[in-house]
Image (tube, rainbow, N blue to C red; front, side, top):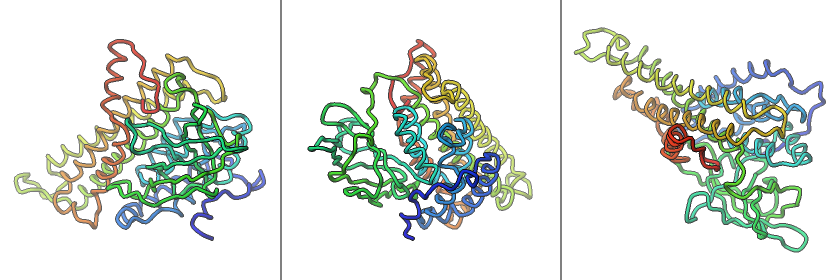
Length: 411
């Protein structure tokens, strides 16, 4: 079986054979996270793409965990999912980021999909499908400008153009593709990866998050059926929880990076760090300035973790289990502000803690054998997704003037 074939959906098992005990699934996932952590440094060093690791997570139910109960899923809450993403990011943030767009895709289907579309795609996900993004483009006048066209051609729609930074693309069985229709509407097209005209390129060469497979997807006259489209409202007109949800998972990944760097600093400080002569102690762990560095790292990492948890609870409160029960604009806006606060905290924590690790380890911690620099490279790469300064501005405007954040996918 080829690598791609191993990631395509499989026939559903009979109901009595499917995993339905979420507590058992969580135990299995915990063991899997430990395995992932043990190989994360090597995968980063060698750029070993984690096909089989992602396949195992799919088989354990990670990718289908938030499929609604009415469609046969475990229907876990946002708070539980955020904790899972943070723990997965602590083990390997590349894998967490590779699966983050898939989780966002499921929420888009919940928000914008028709009942028959939900039934179809949630079923595919329960069979093992990974539906990841092909949204971002290069070369526009502003970030987020969409030029990829979905055009009517005789009796069918056709999709053409290039998408970049398509995180998780090499692991995908399906794509959700943001496009501009020739009738002026915006649409999300849901198409299988193996459809004629879809080409996935392994051209991501970022300094960090090296195995997220955030490459290019080329689309050349790709056929799209009417029932493979989810029409979107005009930009800035309808507030949903979509943007806050995506940002919260990003914050969870950042907090996981901070926690991983903190854990490595503690272990290195206990087992290998040497004190300087001025400290007057025999063990590195007794050096007062090493202790001070670890104390600051603890406050940053655990503070970000708490902020992410707080934001998850608030966002969950405006996203009822039952599909289609809307929260108010004010409630959604407030939740977005709380998520923005968490993203600010997590961004600062992962960058600072991953850099402070070397205050604990010293020069010997910089060797390629440890590959500790991957934490900072991952943090710096991941936190460039959006300018956190705009989040701080929105938060300040909210608390000073009562102004809700703008309606977009970044705040």
